Length: 196
Image (tube, rainbow, N blue to C red; front, side, top):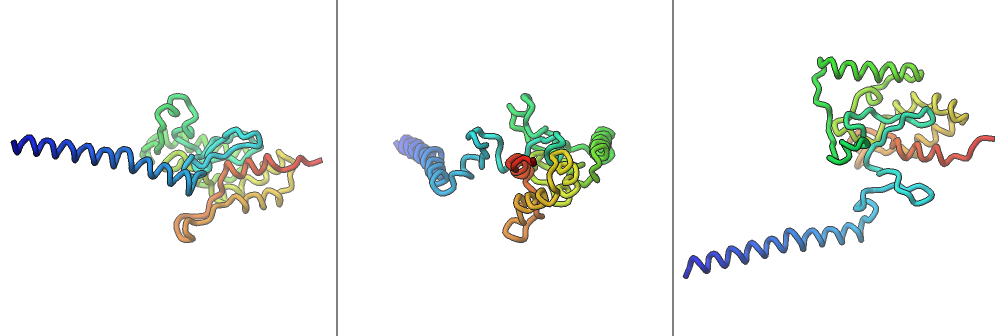
């Protein structure tokens, strides 16, 4: 009889813990997130004027047009390709510094930047650890100002103020380096009134 009681007790304990950890706690956290921080809980999604989601404030996107500031290169192509998007891949290439494939990719980036008359900076040449970095350094933004200003026929000082407005400072004032959110900066560029 004691074995049946023990088995009954184990089954009830398992069901109670399952109910608590698999249903009640996640539901509680979901409700708290939606009430306290709904923007963050829903992926920090950014929409355009028509209300269409165009990206997340947390994940980088590729920009290749001369009208926009270019992002960091990505080994996962920012999960835009169908094969990558279905797996939700994030990560670095894990290629050694001596690997010919890595050296070739870096040389292509440097050549592309030099053709655009942009001084190569580390974050415009090397990928990030996640492959999804949304920031570039202030220096990487500064070296692109002339290109964007000339293509858009905008005064570079206007672009400088947009860079300042879209720069995220150090986390808690001490962690990391300031970085320019490329998606927000490019959206701010598009929002500028056209020059007459």
